[in-house]
Length: 422
Ligand code: AMP
Ligand code: GLY
Image (tube, rainbow, N blue to C red; front, top):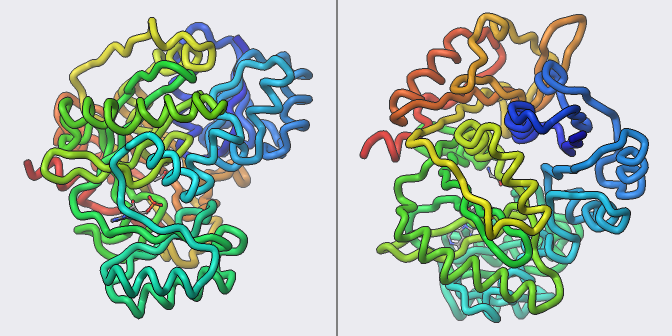
């Protein structure tokens, strides 16, 4: 099987790493890829949001299966274009990708499906939005409707702060994404992520994870794309996962199918758990980054079989072979991230580290310059390990970090603290 993965971050490096372990994979191309991916697969330059360009490339390279990593190509309809051309694709249609691309759409689906989530109002003008906030009081959550690269959510502690956020959003601070605004009840509880494969009819859970969104130790400081993650998430017990499937995910899938937009791909459900009950915070229509890295480390080669089964509508007969293991990934970021940071720092020591089925450094933002690995993004490396306990996995990952010479980088030293403290 010739496989194309779209994307070029740590998520796609881990997908490539897992796919290559499967003997079914004859050839793997990743577009655009990065320096770490280039060490294990062919990389290609391609406009991954241009469906016609991707379809032409697939034809020229005799690709049998396309795995879409990030949300942007999905929201742009790349999966539809490929399916129209008869290509097997892992990833939802443009219509189904609204579960991530529009928060108002997701709230309407939850209403119709009876899925528990925060109470909300949906507004297209600032005056009505402000009146709603005044009536509800604070804390309250103000969200730009569209894709805003993870920045379109403001948790307002006061009514005044919420009003200011509303003015910012309608004033264009998030571009077109803020033309409509969703205002939500602030939910208490502990957050965890639940990953489920969907084939339009059936669903198959493939793991739970928790990430650390804040840049600082103890979960403090500004939000980032994620500074580390671990799987499984102990807070998401089997009983809560069953409830999330029965009350949130299956009803959502049924509603999507009833609307003529069956969902196929991975559904990433962000859940808020309070007193044993899950409520939906958000859906994403792709794997989380860096959550994917810990899921791939645990699933290994079977990830390809499972994604193929989802794409071919065969999930009813698919099953995950679980090992009783734990995985962790620690992000090494460029100094200054998530604010401004330098690119082009040389990273040394990577070639001295083991690369095994339980230890791997996935590259998130690197490029090769004069034969040296250099940083080319805010999040640069995902140092990932698996063990029989989370503590063992964490000790391995931090041991690997000690072998990496990245003078202009930093990492959090407390990834996994909630679960390790148990
Ligand atoms: P989202 O992009 O919708 O996931 O929001 C980003 C983050 O904001 C989430 O991961 C939560 O930590 C937080 N958040 C979003 N909505 C709520 C809510 N209704 N109540 C509490 N926290 C929220
Ligand atoms: N790590 C959060 C995300 O991928 O959205």
